[in-house]
Image (cartoon, rainbow, N blue to C red; front, side, top):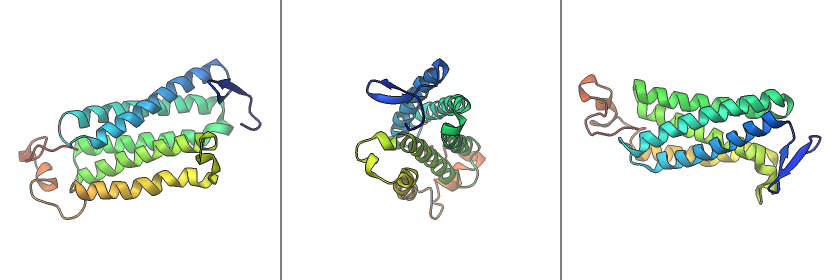
Length: 195
């Protein structure tokens, strides 16, 4: 950390910006790890009632905490952390859009929901790599620009594949997208699926 006072905690350099900063950082890291795990669990769960929406709710809450703590840290070290504040804002905004699409069910809501939540997860990982890439094995050999681009370069094709596989993009199939948005189909569509 050039030009910044730093503390060594468990062999990791962290900014020495006072007690409030360190407390916010501890909560931030905990919420970030929680969001990463919840995101994986939600993504790999069947898209129906149960694990998918429960872990999705944990993910949404954790990204809210990530944004709140990023706001505190950026306020204390604006020049060094303003980009992380912006990334955290985009991450939470996309998670909220995904939540909104699931609740309001606009036309092709599963594509909206899946794309927004995946974009949020990509944002979460981008923030992590932009901030920590220079201190990670192998990542420390990469140009800084790749910290910004690699999560999206991997995440976008994987998201597209998942959306196609789950029928969220492509022609609307009866019993999936079209039926789930009709009032008569109930909250889970005709086949009981949710996103």
